Length: 263
Length: 226
Image 1: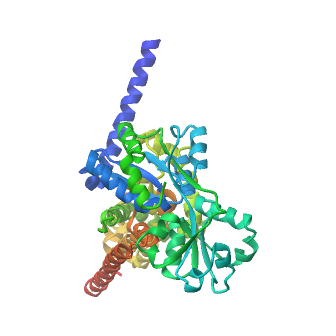
Image 2 (image 1 turned 135 degrees about the vertical axis):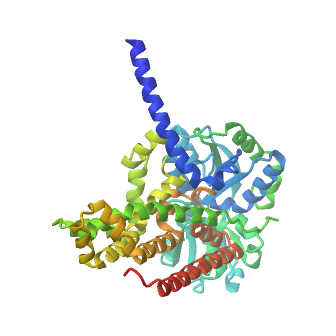
Image 3 (image 1 turned 180 degrees about the horizontal axis):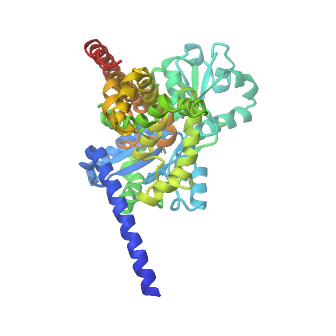
């Protein structure tokens, strides 16, 4: 009885394997260029505020470990949604603690760790704004007709900005002037290109080469942005991703992160 | 300083996706177009509307529905998972599937028009001479609608090359796998890498321009078919 079931399931497995092989060989043709470089590499979902330091971090890591790191930059909420739907990331660098914690509770990821802390700033090119004393005074100016902010539902920087506006009682004054961007990087892009007068951006954007053309105000009412990362349980390169996670909090990485305004 | 070199991988992904979609879709669309052109089925207009739906649906609506069926628990996702043990969402096969649906009307309509334009007497004489309907399809209809098939191929290719919303929703933006050039351009603009966005946009614009020139040249040269 047991033997018979064994044989039958073996036959079924063989059939399944054959089907798999035939499908595989069809894709092989289509995937040909990718196959040439199928050596180990990591795919990381990265919150958009972390674009600049991440580029340098992944480059340094590649030089030391010769493992290339690919990244998808979008809002934390977006990556969160993708991970729930089995997106093939090895590591998730969020812009908050909430989303990695939720993923951890639901068993998608290993225990999260904090890799960076940052602040929200109000950044703009507007000269009048730059003469203001603080961000609250700046927002009162009628010349700030449009102000960009990251979508508070998916971007932690956006929700921190909204929290600060509500604490300061400024929400009713700016509500009608807000332009919602998909990510905090896009909020900065809108302000940088001049389609909006100012934007709620990441501190690292204000420190960047482009950011130095304008001025910024730290938003002290906004909660500190504590950014947590987590390794996905579904990763296929556990050793490499552990190495990268360890590298992210190494003294060398700390130096790079500080350069871009992270603690 | 961060190195500012242009990464051309998204363009290769786009090219691969467009070629795969065009080849698969031409094969899939031919019988559909044949059905729409010649069938006397009463509810044909309903089928035609379903096939043309992706033309008028907002890409986000299509993307949302695809997301639902392509989930590991979804109908298509489950079948795929059984075969390959991988997730269809956020994978290259996944965005091919999405492109097939999204570009279906662009493949079917020109072919259907070309089929319908064929002189019915050709088909009837073939029938009288004893050809089976399969043989009629391959030896009378296909050779007589070269231009329509060619137009389908070009439309599907260019349309897939420029796809954005649907692929972003079901593909994410995984570098080397589902990050196509239109998404790469969007992200480059977001990250203020205007050089990269400009260069890649230029290449895409040139490809589209050359395709159109090629269409014009060929349609002037080959006036056979209809």
